[in-house]
Length: 314
Image 1 (cartoon, one colour):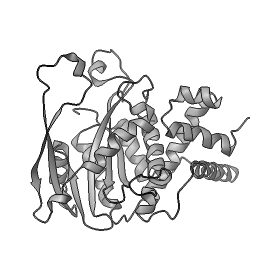
Image 2 (cartoon, one colour; image 1 turned 135 degrees about the horizontal axis):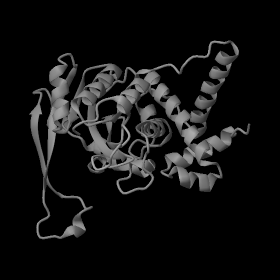
Image 3 (tube, rainbow, N blue to C red; image 1 turned 60 degrees about the horizontal axis):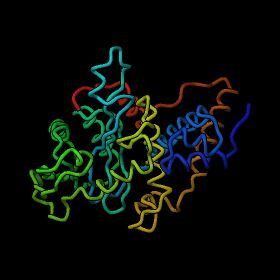
Image 4 (tube, rainbow, N blue to C red; image 1 turned 45 degrees about the vertical axis):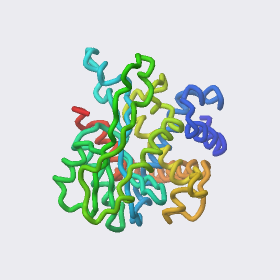
């Protein structure tokens, strides 16, 4: 059986991380669609495991959280009109938590935009912080419900509402244009927080950057995910690339280096070597008769919950 070399795998992953769709990668790299999809699956698994094991005990001062919209197979408004629509299709949200100083994505989750996923997301975030942090979120009700149900969160939190207005007098040509921005309003915050601590600017700068590097998260696209697990794998690869490989302009180093969890800038080939190492472990276990299912980590559990958990009101 033919096997891609490390260099060929690194080239394909590099193209995926730069925002090309799977079909575009097949045309550029000359690999089959199934080969690229299988490599993305393997990369998503090892990146999720590596993030879960190594992005821990993060010294954070200001953490900002937000969620971005995409969809799997169909938009939510179209799911109800389709008889026998597969489970897991519809609106898909990516929850992200960024440390404002190092720009590190500390935690992420792919799933529904509801209180249950919010609780999973905040639980995972709290488990990765080494100290009490200042947390800012938007006014999404799910955050309030999650925090009310978890009294043990060691955070100073604030909610920042952005106020928008309609663009009156204009026609449908502004449908895909940003709405008018009228300012912000702090609706809840701990007394210990300074005005400069209450912000979501860092995480909102990452929101438009994600579609640039993750083709399937673009709003108007035909490169959408057909399964939510495929979307979760692509997000895991993007987070690994963002944290460890891509130089952040404001820092001149990677976020992982700024946060002290990496001592050098990674190359795409380093991600490929994680895949090679995981495959070698499977071969050794198979030869010794101890082959079992892939270990379930906190990150893979979260992805599994995203695929099978409730997908109600978003």
